[in-house]
Length: 134
View 1 (cartoon, rainbow, N blue to C red):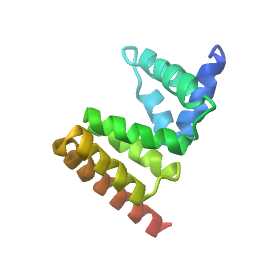
View 2: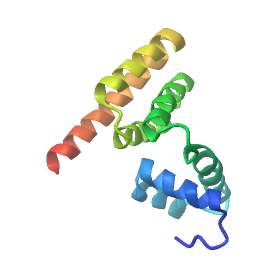
View 3: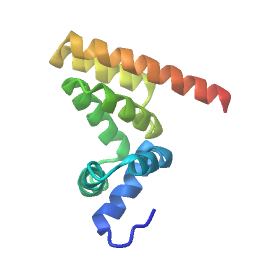
View 4: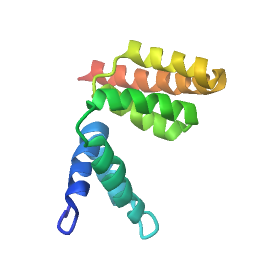
């Protein structure tokens, strides 16, 4: 990807985003972007990933844990899938994911936790199958 003309924050964001979500996912996000969505991809890369995820102060694993709780609370299933994969990549364990989602049940309600557990179960099964195939 051509990064000429991109800010340092964007470049840090691209690196962080690729580390957490995987290079293939990030490349696909940019390759799939069109005139309508390209600015959003740049915005998310620079601000969410470069100005926030790439900051010192919290490890990626901790940021993943926080994200899983917030995204579950907001009931954003697509983002939860993406960030569950990232959390696993960042070292969040199956047991930690379960505890995060149980915490969601108490503070955000059973419907949010039930949906999140369903999604997590599927992502964990995919992860296990991929690990078995390696």
